[in-house]
Amino acid sequence: MSIASTSSSDSTRISICLLATGVCAALHVWKLAPALPVLQVELGMSLVQAGFLLSMVQFAGMTLGLMIGLMAERMGRRRCIAAGLALLAGVSLLSTVFSSGTMMLLFRALEGCGFLMAVLPVPSMFRQRLPPSTLSRVMGLWGAYIPTGTILILIFGAWLISLGGWRVLWWVLAVLTLAMMATVLVMVPDDAPGSTRKDAETGGGSGAAAHTPSAWHLIRQTLGSVRVWLVALIFGCYAAQWMAVIGFLPTIYAAENLSVAMAGGLTGLVAGANIIGNLAAGQLLHRGVPVLRLQLAGFVVMMLATLFAFAVPASLPARFTAVLLFSTVGGLIPASCFILALRVAPSPQTTTTTVGWMQQGSALGQFLGPPVMAMVVNVAGGWQWAWLTTAVLGTTGMALAFALHRQASS
Image (cartoon, rainbow, N blue to C red; front, side, top):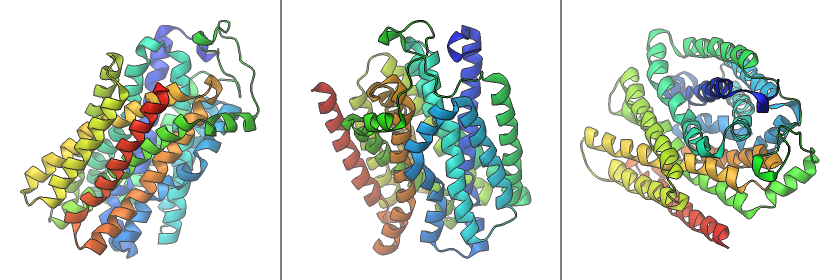
């Protein structure tokens, strides 16, 4: 049974399964944040070292996003997703046994590979399955898979850590991920390696398999597009800010003498607010609001919110509200980037590689964001200077958004 031939109800069911897959994979990316204060003490890490441990999961995405996207096209998207989930589960279990600082860095890098294998094929599957009239809304939902996983892990993960330590959380996630892998294998139809349904707009026959270009041709097509590069860099500027601020919030709140559970819960609420922005972006794009307007609004509010949250003397509730606004309005950016990736892909066959390259831009931002912010804080003399990082990234992101708009208009 091919993906293209499934009924509307089957497509809905499979789409829900794929959305759940993204959330499950996101749990592993963010499981370190609530455990970071505990691990920092257990492993004797400095703030900058903790920042690298937080972002090491992005190492694979920073270097292998395009290659893993190409691999998904070759081995089959469902098989790639299942293999990624298996890798995440296995590494999570191994981390509880070999938990030195060096091994934790290695395992985080491997988890980055598993994460990419699980999530990169999904947008391409959505594009093949869904009509254009619903694609914007579904991609808005997909843009929220990271914040959804983040709020779940920060709230329930912090609770599990308070009950039995970080290893209990790692075990639970391994079991949950294996269950998700089994669900994907049962619910998502198999797709032949390298198969691609021609989109309706290309004029292909119903469900006809398109000719599979060479790997080098797909790479050249993807990397030869200036618009693909711009979308990747815009996503990177957003991701660097979001990862740095959200990733360090539990540590910042711990310095305010809040409990691990309370710090995780507050950070989870901030991460969850990002879902609102993603869903709003999907609706606004569906109604014809320009992508540029959404991205500019997101970057401006993120810069102003962090300036107030870190640099302005205010009460904890007031600063928490500012960070909440940072995450909510910032959510307009990722959903718009996923839509842009589908629009700027040079061909239907390069959809997964385009998303993979965009993921590399995102991963580069997430990898550099936390340690750069930590270094700024250390050099400048306190968290009140953290807003400098978001100011530079936000300004760069807006310049890139304007450049992409000019490219699209030319």
